[in-house]
Length: 326
Image (tube, rainbow, N blue to C red):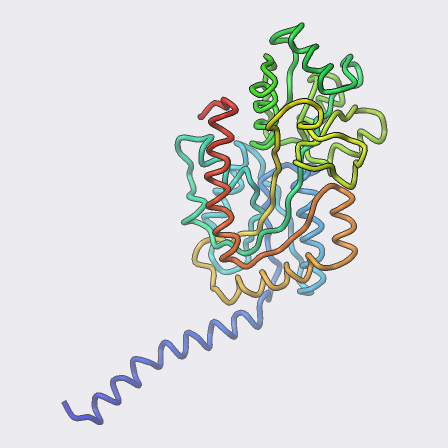
C-alpha cells in the first residue's frame, strides 16, 4: 500500500474523532440551551426538597435558564431515581440523589430497577447533615434516657415515623443500640411522617434538621438529640446520641448530584464546576448551615469513590440495625 494512501486513511480515521471532540466542546459551551429538569425523589416540603430548591435557584441564576424541580417521591426514592436513570443522557435531566437512593437502597432491597454505579454519571457531592430525634410534646420524656425508660416500660407501644432510609435507620439503630421495642411506621417520604408526629399520631422521628427545627422552635416538637458525632452549630445545646447515653450511635445523611449514564463528560464537568461555585457562596453557606447542612462539592471521580465507600458503610448499618431487606 502506497505511503500516501496510508496517510490519507489515517487522516480520514482521525476526522470523525476531531469532529466529535469539537461537537462535545460546543455542546458544553452552549449548555444549557433550554430549561433543565432536576428530579428530587422525595415529596415537596421535605429536607431534600428544601435543600434541592436552594441549589436549583442558584443554578437558574448562573445559567439564565430555569432549573425545574420535579418531585417524584415513593418507594424509598426508587420511583424518582429509576425515572432519572432512564432519562435521555443529554444533560437536561439531573437527579438530586441521597444516601438513601445511592447507598442504603443497595442493601435494603434485594432487587433494584436501577444500578447506582452503572446507571448514573456522578457529578458532585453536595453536603451532609445529621438527623435530629424529635418527639411529640405529649410524650413524657425530656431526655433520651427518659425516652428509653418509657419504651422499656411500654414495649411495642411507641412508634417512630420513617419516610427515608436514613429516618428508618435512625429508629432501627436506636431500637438495637438501646435495647428497646419500638415500631416503625413507614411513609412515602419524611414530610408526611413529620406531619403525623406533629399531629400526635406517631410519637417520634429521626428527621433532618432543616425540616424538624422550625417545629422544635415553635414548640410543636421536642428535640432530644442529634445523630452526628459532634454537636451542631444550629443547635449547640442539644447533645449527640452518644452524649445522651447511646454508645456507638452516629448517623448522617448526604446529598449529591447525578446525571444519567452516558451524559457527555464536558457537560458533567461544567455542572460540577458550577456546583462548586455555589457551594462557596456565602449566602448559600449561611442558609444551609443554619439548617444543619454542611454544603460541599467534589469532582465526579471523588463522588464515585465516596459512593462506593458509602454503599459498604450502609450495608453494615442495615445489617447491624436489623432493618428488614425487601
